[in-house]
Image (cartoon, rainbow, N blue to C red; front, top):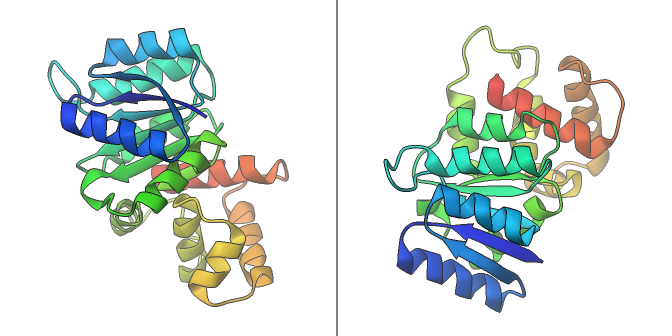
Length: 214
């Protein structure tokens, strides 16, 4: 699996390179700014990109903007964003084409190597990987007229776990319920969010997008 890294801090960039290489990935490029990311994607056609939100020169949103540009040129390009802060808009923009392959992890909480590597693989395969703390903050910030208001507390909990990238089986284990119960909750979520029957993975992405836009 081929990876491009965009991170301006040399130590973190090289640390990610080594970690991913040791985990069986092929790091085809490690760059320090947005234009470098776009060039690397065009030149290497990676399976997934790992991108810091804030890159030179202004350290605001160059990373995610470059990721959006690269994804526009290469539809469906999987992107895992690393950030210091929770920014709902960035994740929603990346998911807006409904294709999936998007992750959003908080740097300070990436402590478990196995979980991080699993998140990279999940995003590369077209899934989502939202940091649980980011999900908690986003859920806490929903307004009274949110599109999610019709969901029950349990359905909102299931949707939050879906946003983290968990499968129905993993959600069932987390909530200590049967997988059948989770499937029923997921079906109810799709119905209440107005997502007609289609590919299950595609609907999960659209449900997560609705959650982020909530």
